[in-house]
Image (cartoon, rainbow, N blue to C red; front, side):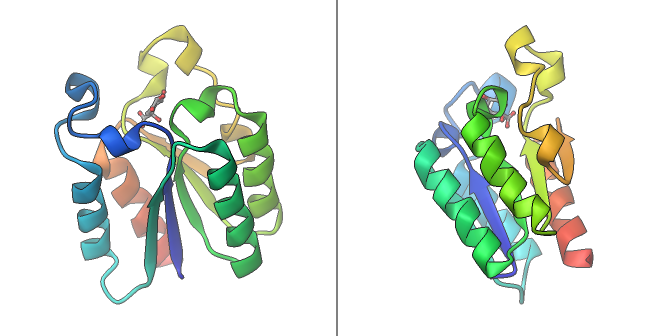
Length: 142
Ligand code: DQA
């Protein structure tokens, strides 16, 4: 796999989940769009509501040296376990790009803190699916 795209909790509900914030397109549509952009490149797209599963996938990324695009969703704001797993990847010299559909800084106070950003390679937020597209363009250009 050349690129791993990980989506955290509740993002399987895109399309109907707070559409005024996240839009009406579904996770399947996001996946289709990213597959189209990554034509000819192996891209692995996954979603989990389970912290342990996301951590396991980050461990796999270390072992396989796969760059990661990660939307940690609500785990962004409080999961030190996910942060430590992201640090395992970036400390191994493998990029992890934190992405968000919305701009968390323009929302509730509790969303202003990311425990992930300090160990991520970079952060892209506020551009809807464009956040993922920009991250993918960067990784494909490397
Ligand atoms: C999110 C922002 C988070 O605060 C929220 O918990 C999400 C989605 C985003 O993509 O904008 O689930 O990561």
